[in-house]
Length: 331
Image 1: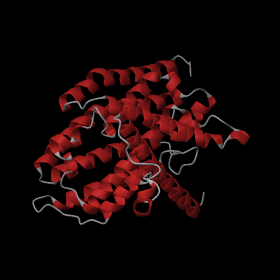
Image 2: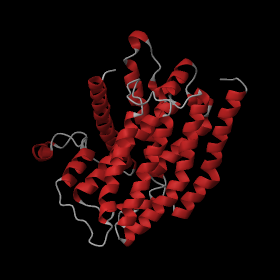
Image 3: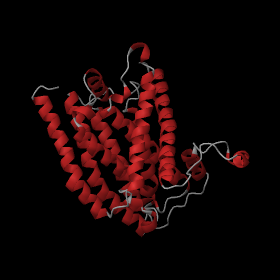
Image 4: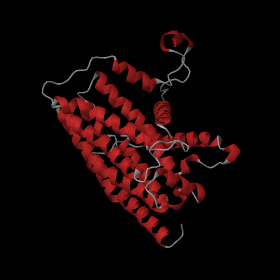
């Protein structure tokens, strides 16, 4: 693939990520509202408001990003200004590169690299790490508390996330995302071979997305917005955009690693894989939103104990199961 074509494909993947990330974020907000007997952002706007607000609110996550981009950015005078300003940008860059490592129905730029899964793991960790740095550098007490909570949650959910991904890699005998997809296409979806790893991954994603019961770092009624409290204007817009892309990235990673990337059809029926991929992503977010609506917020000590007591053992059980399946020649 020549350089120009690679750039075109990379831009195309990123645009897909923006479009699907926006839609999945909207879907989560809509489901969460309906489960609480609220309307949420309207897909079809009331006739009387269409001239002012447009025909739909399906682009509400992007509207929020655009609105904040047009506002003034205020930098706290007592903050570590360089760290405060650069942290959201680095987190966004990390998500953007990770997106290029995650195949979308066989479409990828970096997913075929032999170390793609390692790179993806580091990039996902980078997002949380720089959110912690940004909150700590803000000089705000709420930012400091939020950064500490983010660090504790990071320790709790990152290990099952990475362990689950490597459980899939062991079964495929490769750290390449494309090889993991090819293994599932030729055998079975990994969720059927190793449901423990998929279960642990699901709860790790809840923590990474700050969904209940793991929305402790930015609990509005307790610590304003946690590590993001002092952010405003363009920098807050970057954070919102990063979180929107995380919805796409983590949903796609789960579907690729455990559900064959939606690639169940071949030949003339291959285009149906796109619909299957989208359906699986929406189903995954539906399950996330259901837990988000049904659960109260944990305290940070409760969240860490939950991961340590329940999710870590399940994740390590998944890793052990993958080793057993490979060593016994089952796969």
